[in-house]
Length: 231
Image (cartoon, rainbow, N blue to C red; front, side, top):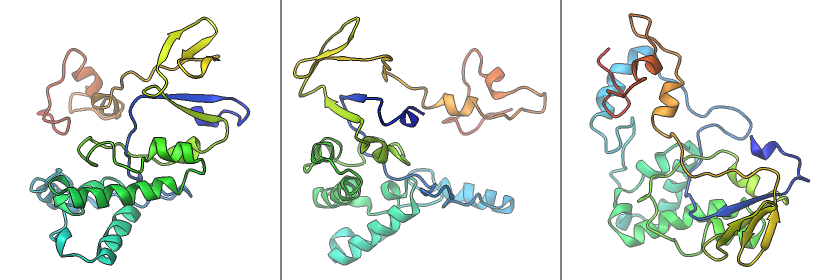
């Protein structure tokens, strides 16, 4: 909830790596674009997901990038973007992992969407560079909802520590090579996240013995890809 700070509160972000997130499924008006499936479809959805590349209820399009016109490619990208979630990554052209031209097209569309949400050219280039820093989709993307709107706020500054390394942490603030010391009240170190078991352990569900997942996994986890457990 850091972004709920007053616009008068400076929020410098020291960036080492950038993420390339597609949009989440919840729209900006608070409505959900994804509907939970009916209970009687669970079995068929599960069986279908077992045969897909990403273990999802959707899979790559059979369409070939090289056979599609620029207009057809743009239409596919727009539809996947509208759906949100990881479909932009795992429901489009499969050759994005094998063909540079296809990957470049996927990246440029993503960058165009991101840049449209950032008014500062410096932030545009830092968050969505003109040239892809790596093949899009080869690093697992996260999802975002209002991330770029927050970055676009005038009180938010992005400092690339590759261009201006952090020299030291002082009692007053963070000292970087180019900016010098920037004072702070709170320093948040985003050095690691519990991205796997963290969300699962927060689910309030118990087995037949009344034991929660958190209790069951208190000493160690026994599970298949965090999706199934024998009891």
